[in-house]
Image (cartoon, rainbow over all chains, first blue to last red; front, top):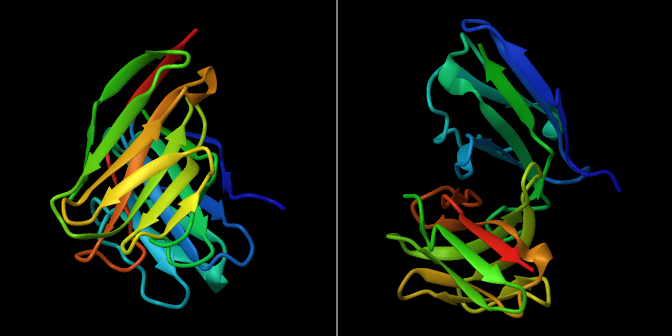
Length: 115
Length: 112
């Protein structure tokens, strides 16, 4: 079946502009995660959605970052007033249940470059 | 709190063994291991759960010491395909259920 997909694959924007990154999880997966990976760095947790529960937003680095998950499926990560330090690869992952007990399936990522 | 991985990098010859460690300052209920090849998404290797349950690839071996809050990944008879960066992700009781915090990774290079 189809895996996790993300769009766009690459995004170049100017400092101060807003960007939206999209994630389509595997059908039926109730958990969805966003991570950020800077060059040569690890996976930085951003936000976690699990079913109809309130999302865990504890990893969002500032109030410029927000995310939504509509209908328990597609998710959009929005970065407002982008800064150069926001440049990174943004990875989305989904899981059939609680991610602590289930494998996470990662998408190919969106490479964001802020000029 | 981010788990600490060691070593940061290791170079092996084909056929050699390696151990990658992951330790946390918090009580853990799960440890995940993923491998990421350059330019690709991370791929699942194994989950180790409190109580001894494990889920993952048969050829991968790992341990989870709950008391020491540590996990180790054992790579034996390494192959060229093992090259990549290995990440551990930990689920601790301080975070929300399902949330994982990943370490900075261990870069493994296997040479012919």
